[in-house]
Length: 379
Ligand code: SF4
Image 1 (cartoon, rainbow, N blue to C red):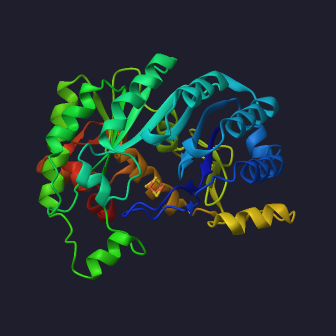
Image 2 (cartoon, rainbow, N blue to C red; image 1 turned 30 degrees about the vertical axis):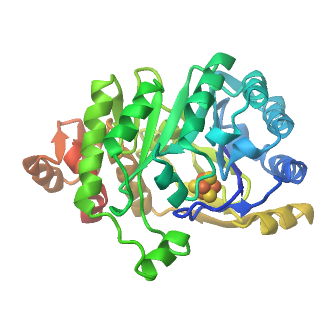
């Protein structure tokens, strides 16, 4: 099994962010630890997790997990490993903002068993970071990387955002070069989208921001691919690239349809009944999803009052399961078994240069990835 732990606290809301966060000057680490502990006790003995085998990966996402007190993080990891077996190769990731990385914190993270840090860099341009409402500056990035490396971390991932509105001074190629110069093992590149109820959506409504033309974002995606491949990376998922041997285990499990347990506000879980056919995720039993209350206070209150913080549970229909398998599989360079895609669709995609197809697998090309949503919508 895999475990995702959502830590919702942030110092401020980034202009583009619609995640489930709680803006706090001081992170309420003790209350958070108490809530996660209680939720873990509710979930840990459910048969679907007991039978889920050793924990293959733990991912502290957010929010800003690097703002959580290190003893709270350590206690959560100790709780998990005292009740379930951690696989020897278990990947334990912490999302961190560069300005949170200090020598003391890095050392505590490393010694408690975190073995991968995902740094939210986003850009090296000061004006872009200010516009995004990020709390760090570009000159905090290299010292953060140096601190993590000298502490012992040898698996670092960087997040960058492309497709920033054109009015921003943004040299994407320079940002890529500066990221690659720092020699990360993994890169996650996300296209900026304007979500409703964000500062960015309000700026657009007032006419202060215009979305970047789609062609600009597409060009930046293709440039990134060239730069990353030339630097020895494998572009293994539409938004992710890694040096050989450093693909994200946690996310790869998610794209393969592995069961995962989510803890914390807004966290989602997914599991599948025992396969009766040729094995999950394709041809397996019914797939289920569950999700927790989104807001930190509602989540905390439910747990504190002895109620389950779950907000919803659903069982996917066979058609929904198939759609999810297609969508997640086509995101990756492994693609999907050919039998999941009607032959007339993949033959047309192949003619357009959007897919490469064999009798066994259908894989999207870069041009196909640029059209991923539209292609899956055809199905
Ligand atoms: S740090 Fe991350 S989670 Fe927090 S507001 Fe910014 S983008 Fe959202």
